[in-house]
Every structure is written in C-alpha cells, then in structure tokens.
Length: 333
Image 1: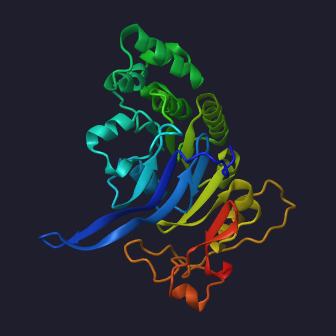
Image 2 (image 1 turned 90 degrees about the vertical axis):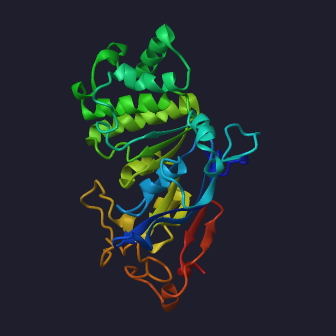
Image 3 (image 1 turned 45 degrees about the vertical axis):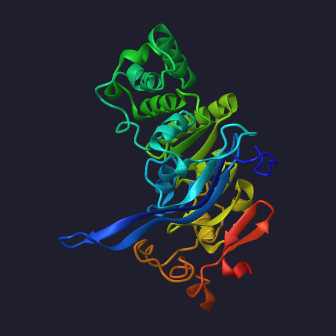
C-alpha cells in the first residue's frame, strides 16, 4: 500500500514518551529518568507495514509496547481509527475497561516464541484463550476457529492438543501469529518476530505475515534490526536513535537515498551477497550515550562523522527530503 494514501491513518502517534524513573536512597527519591522513548511521531496507514529499526536499546520495543498500553505512556497521544469514517480514539485516554474492548483490534507478536506461550496450556487453549476472554466463541465453534487459525499459519489442526515444548522455534512463532490473529485485529505489533529464528524459517514466517496482511487487511508495526528483512516486508521505515526518530520515509527512498548520517551508517553495515561489490563501510566511533543522560543538541553528534558546532547545541527538526521522506539533521537545512 502506498504511504501517500488520502484516507485517514489507522494510527497517528504524536509526541510519544516513555520515561522510566531512577530512584535512589533508602527513601527511593526520584533523581532522574531513563528516556527510553522521547517524543516520537509517526502514522500507520491501513494495510501498511511501518518498520521501526535501530541499534539495540534505542527504544523500538518500548515504543511498540507503550503504543499498545502494555507500558503506561509518560506523554503523547495515539489516535486509533477502527473504521475510516469513525472519529479517532486516543488509546492513552481510555480507561482500563475501554482499553480492553479495543484490544480486540490491537495485538502483538512477541520476540521469544517459547517464553510467550504458557507451557501448561495446550496450543488449542493458548490460541482459544482470547476467544474465551472476549466471548467470541465457545464449544465446537471455538474448536473450529482454532483449527482454522492453525491452517492459516501452515500448521495441521490436529496439533491443537499438543504443548509448546513439542514444537520447534519456527512452529511456536506460527502459533504466536495464530494467537495474535484470533480476534481478527486491525493492527499488530511484530516485536522482533523473526530475530530468534533461522534464516530459512525467517523467510517462511515473513511470507506468512505478508499473506495474512493481504487476506485480512492487517497493518503492522514491524520492529527489527535486520535491515535485509525490513527491506523485504516494509512499505515505510522509521529509524530510531536514542529514543527519537531521526529519519522516516518510503522503503525504496531510505535504502537508495538515506539522508541522515546514522541511517547511512546502518545501511553500510548490511552484508551484500556479492564478493566483488565495493562499498564504503561507515564505522561509528564510541558507544551509544545513556538514555538517562542524553547529550545536548543532536543526540547523534557524539558519534557523527560530519557533526558541526550547531549539532552540539540544538536538536534538529524534521526536514522534508521529499513528499514521503523526512530526516532530523542540521546538514539538510
């Protein structure tokens, strides 16, 4: 789906923040915050895949979980439109009871397919639990829907009576996908959904996600660090660094014409399956600064090979590179 669609986005995130308090002393005084996500803006359109990429610890997973209210947001808004012509709902303003109703539309696939499944529940009960909680189906209808979900992810319905330890990692992740799909959601956060799998299994799971997206009209926030996978599945890409989005745009533009120095460094590290290909590798010096004490100005200036004096003083605003591509860098102004 094109990111330039004229319909209203399914989800509009503005100023998303998630801070974790730092407490010290016997009385546990609040002495600071870990700014895991520090003012993030993005839209996700219907039937679109937006990938969130960046180094470990940049805030990708925290952003996804906060969006779904699995973590309480520190600030910002998340407007959700279940239907194109409906008034948007701010997920962050909903009561727990109202949020529970919306969870039918908002699901997540976790990174670890084993830890996310209850070892005491059969696969059929793990998938059918959501149907029970939301009163969607029971009895024979519940069994029929569970069997149908297993078939959608390439598993035989007869495995419903088996337990998680009897499956491989790839099979368990398929079960996780079936569980996320059980309530026919409109939006799914894929939190490093293929990073724990072998390369061949990754391809199978990615193809399942793409097929399900086409069949059910799903939208994904795909959180990952493998840029090769991201290039294959994404419509648009958002690059995060130290809790903020530094660049966002169409997948083709990001890969062919990256604008931010951090994005250029990330892309230069992607392996090329051609031993004769020559490409300049950009090596970043130093470590990622602490999100508890981010540097003044552009957070990336301590590692940026082209930083200027103004980069150390003020944080850059997003600059339009094209109609579907922006980056936060002083060098673009």
